[in-house]
Length: 351
Ligand SMILES: [Zn+2]
Image (tube, rainbow, N blue to C red; front, side, top):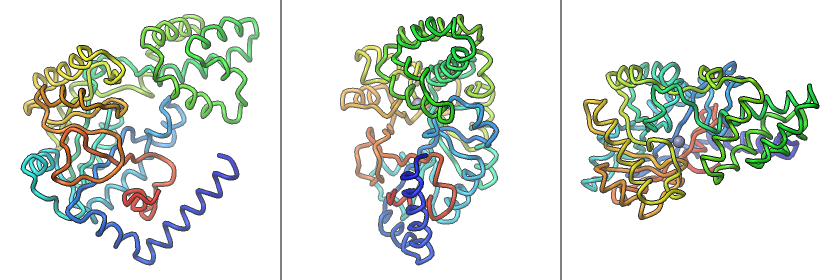
């Protein structure tokens, strides 16, 4: 974090705490969420030790203690809805009770079971998790985490043995990451994660061949990262389903649906529904667009596949008469949202 960023963060923290102490954020919440719901979007819930090992970008991680504090606050100040209650109101256009809230998780990370579930159960609050079904129980990882781990390993290797440097540089160049070899040691991890994040437009075939090449060159087995960045298995999904968690679709291969031909988008959407419906006792009612990318054409495919609602990553609140297939969410991630004032400031859209 630069000095300038640190000053900005301090100003935000002071502003949020002051407004909270004055009761302004609380009034703001009541006005902003009158007859509206806020849909919160989470991904991963990790301990500090786990965060040091993960290849996930901080933008999808929340500290476990912060998550526990956030759930306590939701329980106290919000009306937390199940996906069924939420969907029924949207379909029937029945206004939400003031300060309604829906808790959602994208991707089905294993930490949702180990860390989020006990906290949700402790408070007796429901949540919905959106699964990219081909990743559940298959021992596979997302390319983003793998590429981050392998790039970090490649940079270390290139520094220790300059003989490999050229080959590693050539491999990294196939996905535009060769400049990470020059990154300063102090912010290497962040630099690599940011660089990986910018590669979303690289075709999956190119990413896969780079991952295979790097793993071979570095003598790494992908399974090594399973513990740090793995997904739920179907046994965990079924246990969670019995304990107040509902599951929805998030594609099969987690393809960005606006980047692929309509036939492939349709396949992703329908496979997720078919697999979830066959695995769970309740048919999947909700869908979340991978990476948040959606279009009216993709939304139509989701609706035609039998889902009742679909969620984007566009920020904002939800009214009962909003379009059911482009529902807005507020992304909750790491950093400044540990305290109640900062969490509430985020929900009311101050930051
Ligand atoms: Zn996702």
